Structures are given as structure tokens and as C-alpha cells.
Length: 164
Image (cartoon, rainbow, N blue to C red; front, side, top):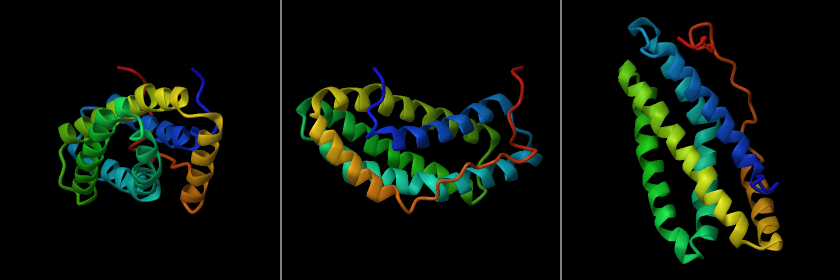
């Protein structure tokens, strides 16, 4: 199913994060002397997009989804995953993570995003009316308007690597 236009801003942010996850996967195992560059990029993404993104989902999308009994369990899982990801990102920002931990973070984030896209967003598009999706989209637009719409450019260290 195509993504409803009202959810596209969140999906675009998901694409930014997934691109980083792919780069981490391809760079792994990350050499010790490159960890700082990766940690800095994770910290920048967390600050520029993820914090506002998580807040928008938790304050706008998740309450709309929880109106439907079948989505309550999924929303509970996603909130728990947000808490775990915040902790992992904070650890990365503080510079206290290993190459393996960065890879686990990338895989955890990727799995989380795919769950939101494939399960939550797909089902919400089926359950919400066009009018409800429009209201959701307007509310999201307001919540995300001050978000830094930045295309984070990887450093020489964190650029995309060819498949091994």
C-alpha cells in the first residue's frame, strides 16, 4: 500500500534514519579509531530529527492508533522501543559505545522503523477515515514545522561503503 500523504513527513524521517543504519551495517565492524565519527553522527541525528520525531509519534500518532483495540499492543511495544532507543542514543552521544553496540543500535532502529511503517502506518491507513488522516497530517505538520529538515551528510569516515 502506498503511504498516505499525511504520514509522509514521518516516513521521510524514517528514510534518513534507515540510510544511516545501512551505512553502519556496511561499515561494521567499525574500527576503534572511527567510533567517534559514528557517535557524532548518531548524536546529530538524535538531536536534529529523532527527538522531535519520537515526540510527534508519542503525542499525535500513537494516541490516534490506540483508539483501535487491535493496535494497543503494538503501540505499547513501540513506546518501549522508543525508550530503549533513547537510552542507546544517549550512550552513543556520551561516547561510551563499542562497535558492536553501534551495530546493535542500527539494527534495533531499523527493525523499529520497519515495524512502524509496515504494521502501524499500514493499519492506521486502513482504519482511519480520510478526514481523520487529514487532521492527523495537519497536527503532524504543526508539530514537525520547527524540526530541522536537514540532510545530514556523512563524513569521510561515515560515508557509504561498498558491500563486502
